[in-house]
Image 1 (tube, rainbow, N blue to C red):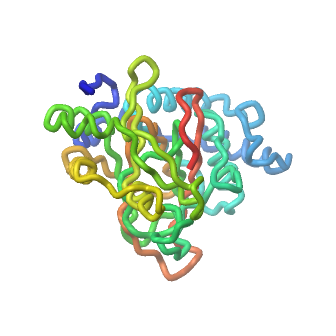
Image 2: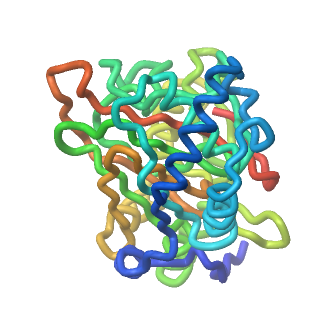
Image 3: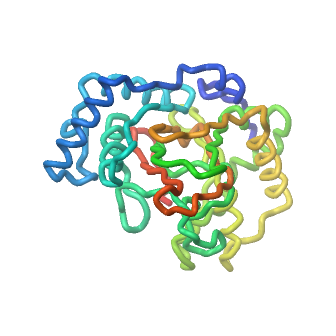
Length: 315
């Protein structure tokens, strides 16, 4: 097949984004007061997290700001950052309510994992990354650049790590177009079916095929990548080894996603909430070291959101 470059607002390089603050918003004191009042009302009413919607979690002045932020994520650069969420001194329950309430104004909550939970806490659980059921959010090692399986992923930072744990983001569009320009033969390979591991166990349902790059919505680009999950799919007896061409394609893809030319790095601090469009952005995290005190260890709340656009295979 012939693969061509894609024109999209999310075709950016890291340095340009570093000097462009249009994808960032900071809450005012009035916004924070409004948010805390909505969270307390939800807590008093006993509203389950899965039922927090803009109707039951109203944010009269903050809601429009979140709508603009969400529009920039899903129709623009694919990246949004909200600063100043008042998490300091709050209980875990209240932080969860804040996260879900804010996110509900950007998209509909998508349940996660086989337990269909409304959110997960991204923190080191001491799990072995090589285990067939370990997910990337459960350990502290470096992650490969990947896309989550929903339209948007949101992360609210409650506490950063003692060191490391930096969030790194690249434009899947910019990387795609670079490969088309420099290695069109490998670009075609990325549009072919690849085996992925859902990490749901050892049964055949844990493995599925999909292309790394695809076109949808009248030619819009969609990226599905996760090198850790592609490589671990080889643990299945019915999944063939990666071909030499696939190995080369992944090598080039990984080189570009780790290039300073493409990477945007964020040192998320308490109260920062990141929103990423999984179709056009890949994200990663550097390895980190935690504080010996469990109360001070890294904790990010992860939410998956559906914005009513293209569906993805659940992971």
